[in-house]
Length: 430
Image (cartoon, rainbow, N blue to C red; front, top):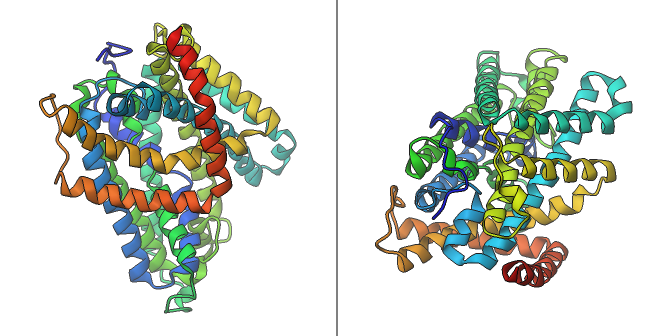
C-alpha cells in the first residue's frame, strides 16, 4: 500500500503525545460531576472508571494489529478502507473529516467562552476571537509539521503535569466535611446507567488518534501500534489519579451535577478563586485540541484525495510536511461554521458515527485475519480471538444503545449514507 507521505519525520514519542493529548479533554473535567450524580458510592465510582479504561485498553490492543498493518496516514479511513473496501471507507472518511471540522469550530467557540469567564469583556467579541484562534492554528500548520508536533508534545506534557499537580493538591489537603451524603445508589434507570457508561467511554475517546499519522512516524506502523497502547495506559493512570483525589478530598456528594468537578473541588478545599486554575487548564486543553485537529483532519482529506475521492490538490504536501491545501479547505469550512453556528448538527451526526466507527475497526481485525492470514503483522492483537470478540460484543451493545437513544440522528445518518452512493459512483468513475 502506497503511503501519502514517504517522509517519516515524526519521532516515536509524538505517538504518546497525540494519544494522551487526544484523549485528555473536557470529558475528565465535566464527566466526574455527571457520574457522581448517579453513582454516590466511591469504590463503585472508581471501579467504573477503571473498568472503562481497561475496556478501551483492550480495544486498543486489538485494533493495534490493524494499525500495524496500515503504514499510511489518514486515521480510521485508511484502516477501514483496507478491511472493508473503497465505499465504506469513503463514507467513513468524509464523515470523519466533517466531524473534525465541526470539532474545530465548536472548540474555538468554547475556548472564548472559557476566556470570558476570566475576562468578561471578551464576551462581546467571542465570534471574532474564535475565528482568530482557529486561524492562528491553521496558519501554524503552514510553518510545517515539526513545529506543530513540538507544540503538541509540549502541550501534552504541560496538561499531564497540571493534572498531576492538581491531584496532589487535593490529596494533601485535609478532607472536607462535604464527604458526607448519600452512601447508596440512587434510583436510576437503565438509560441512566447507559449514559454513565457512555460518558466514561467518551472521556477515553481519542485512542486511535495516532493512526492519522501512521505514515509519518519514525519506526513504522508497528511502533505506532505499540505506542498507542502505552499512551492509553498513561491516560488510565492519570484519570484514576484525579478521580481518586476528587473522592478523597471532597467526596462525590459535593461534586454531583457539577459541570467542572475539579474546579469545584479546588474551590471547596483551597479557596473560592482556585477554580480559575481549572479554567486555565481547560483553555490549554482546548488549544492543544485545535492544534491536533488541524494536524489530523486534513490528513483524512489528503488520504481521500490520494484514492481519488477528493480534489487532487488536497494530496499535495508542502515543504514543511503538511497537506497545505487540505488545511486551507478545513480552515475555510471551520470559519464558515463559526459564523453560521451551524456546527451543532454536524457535531451530533459525527457523534452518531463515532461509536460505530470503533465497532467497524474491531470487525476489520476479524476480516483481515480471515482474508489475509499471511500478511505482515508487526503487532498482533493480544488475546485474539477471545479479546477481539469480547470487544466486538461490547461495542455492539454500545452502538445499538446509541442508535436507539438518537433515533432521529440515526435517520439523518442513514440518509447521508444513501446520498453518498451517487457521489462515490461519480468520483470512482472519474
